[in-house]
Image 1 (cartoon, one colour):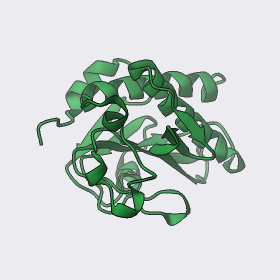
Image 2 (cartoon, rainbow, N blue to C red):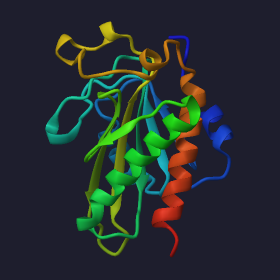
Image 3 (cartoon, rainbow, N blue to C red):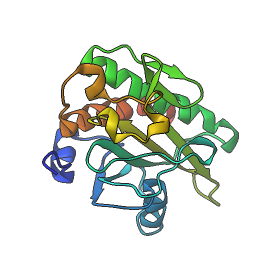
Image 4 (cartoon, helix red, strand yellow):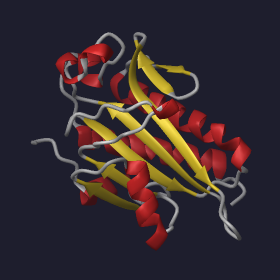
Length: 203
């Protein structure tokens, strides 16, 4: 796997930020949403990001399985403590999807669209998805986990047959491979900038 994610380089690339103040890259995990919950028990700081080079049990909306070919995409979860109530969690899904779409547009001059509530598409095919899970906390701001998956360097053959007509990747849309590390930095910066503007103004 040549194009590996390096936590220290990711952190150096984003500088001082809320999202990405701590970054962990796992070689493999079931689901980054589950992994970050376990880590959060010991270190509940907002802004922790956990990437996985390979997910064996990635989840999408409505318990759909998220396919994640090893080393080909960005699969990560962010630990958040937004100052919103549980009923407002769809705001987080909308924020994350818009930030992913914005980062793709900024970096590659592609024109992604958002298919509500949580998919980002290019030419009608899914390139990214968001899964937000919120947990009520006693005597503390609610805990939210934003799980994000972006198809970066997959070819059509990397997707299961039943998804090949409905899924795409940045590389397929661009006709060339993408530097995952550089795009991860750009994506974390956009997520951080927009999260602070939308959810931390009264912090």
